[in-house]
Structures are given as C-alpha cells and as structure tokens.
Picture 1: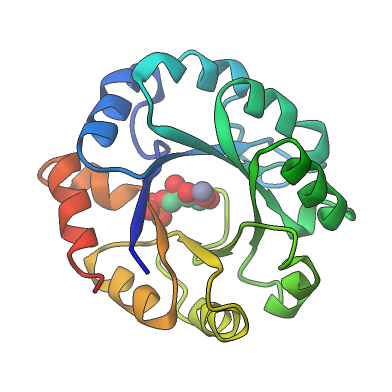
Picture 2: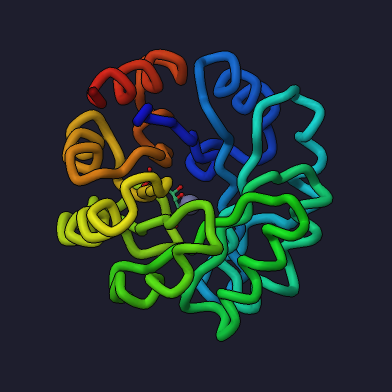
Length: 214
Ligand code: DX5
Ligand code: ZN
C-alpha cells in the first residue's frame, strides 16, 4: 500500500487560503482535507460549503470534507456540489450511517466513516462493505495542534486485520514520529495540519512525513 497525505487547511489563516491550497497541491498532497465544524457536534464553527467552493478553481487536486457536524445527511450534498469528491461523516453524528454510505456510493462519491477516540472500532464493522474508508481520530475532534492519542492505533490494527484493502485514514497529531507508528499499525492516509504549518515549507513537510512510511 502507498502512503497518501491529506494536508488539513485548519491550522492556516482561513482568509488567505488560496496560495496555501495551491502550495499543498504542488507540494505532493493527495487530497486536501477541509474540517467542517458546526458548533454542535464540536464547539467551534469553521466554514461552510460556499467557502470550499470558492477555492475549487485551484486545480485538479481532490477535496475531502470532514463533516464534524450533527446530521451529516443534511449537509453532505452542499459539499459534494462545492467539489468535494470524498465525504467523511462521523459514526456518532447519525443513526443512519449505513444508509448515508449507500447514498454516497450511489451518487458516485467516496465515503469514509470517522470514529472519535471514545468510540469502539466494532461500531463501524457493519459499515465496512459500504464505505471506502474509515477515519480513526487520533485526537478528539474540534481543534488542531493536540497530542496524538496512542491507543487509537489499536483500532487501526483491528481494521487492517479485518480488511486488508480498506483505506484507513488517521487524523490528529500527525508528525514524522507519529506517522511512522500509524503506518506500522496499518493506516495509509494521513491528515496533517499543524506539522505542515510549522515545517520549513509545506512541500518539505509533506516530503518529511511521507518518507517515514515504507
Ligand atoms: C481536528 C481535525 C483535524 C486537524 C488536525 O478536529 O479533524 O483534521 O486539522 O490537525 P493537527 O495535525 O494539528 O492535529
Ligand atoms: Zn479532520
């Protein structure tokens, strides 16, 4: 499996994201990760679909919406229309994750179900045939710059054992040290926020985390 890097825009100044997203795309990002927070599922509010749409003309790079919102079934269409080809919804935020994943698949969108650090991995087992990926949160959702939660790796392991071909995404506290442990546990898609903001450059940061895998 190849490691894929999903830079998160969250830790960069939102009003001037265009050059940042262009730099992420040119620097080797596989997909750009947009953290959508609704003030309900998590306390902060970030941005909506119009904000993402305004950046869509940066080029071909794929966009993914990480919906940290209640009732993601009410919100995903706006982000799909805004140009997100991957929709990540939280298992904790809907009673109908299976149906939502089926809908996304019918619409030709990629889907991922995300689980918080306090959610058991077994809760997503019934969804594994209808989602394209599972996102294991390695911090509690809501804020960038938090410490990686090591015990989340047991969930990555369990998923990899169960589904050798599944895309397993990890999100939160990823840097050149933690990415190695997540990769060894079986993750293959890595959201990177604060580390890229602190790296010598975005491209160099992407290179440094990628080279730790494999
Ligand atoms: C947290 C978000 C993350 C965040 C990761 O709720 O889902 O995507 O941007 O940022 P870092 O890399 O700073 O933990
Ligand atoms: Zn995220």
